[in-house]
Length: 236
Image (cartoon, rainbow, N blue to C red):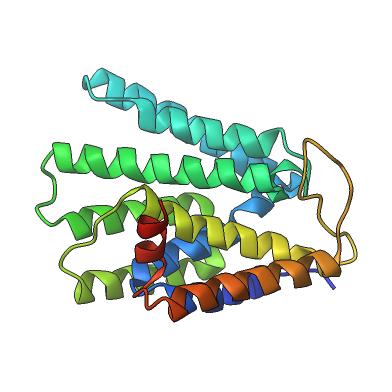
C-alpha cells in the first residue's frame, strides 16, 4: 500500500480536528501533511521553481528597501527538498522539525511584512492570506480548495488570531508527523533517525507513534486544557 495525498490529508485533518479549535491551525496541519513528498524526483522542477520564486521575492523586497529574508527562507526550504532523497531527510524527526521551523519563520516574516506595510487592518486577514500563500506554494493543488475553505471559515469565525511560535509551529509539526506515521505502514517504511541512522522502521513504529499521540491527547484533555496551545504554553 502506498499512501496517497488523500490519505495524508484526511489523517492530518482528523488528528488536528481533535485538538485545534481554529480552522487556520487545521489548514496548517494539512499543509504540513502534504509537504514532505516534495522530495520526490517528479517534483524536482517544482522545487527549482520554488527556489526561483524565493529569489525573485528577495530581489523585489530588497529593491523596495524591505526585509528580504522571506525570500531566503523560501530558498532554504526548496534546498531541503532538492538535496533530500525520496523518503529521506524530509521524512525524519530532524527533518520535520526543520520544516516546521522554516514554515513558521516564513509565516512570521510574511505576516510581519504585511502588517508593517499596513496593507490590511485586520491581523486575521493578513495572516490567513499568508497561510493561503504558503498553501499555494506547498500543498497539493488537489487539496488547495480544502485549505481555502478552512481559511475562509477562520476569517468568518475569528476576529483575531494570535500567531506565535507555539500556535503556528505545532499544527505544521503535527501534519508532518502524521505523514511520517502513515508512510511507516507502507512496504517502503521510513527512516526517522536520518542523518544519524539509515535504519528503516515499519508499521510497528507507526503504531507506537499513534499510541504516544493518543497518550498526549488524553493528558491534554484530562488536565482540562482548552486546546494544545494552552497545554504547550503552560508546559514551557
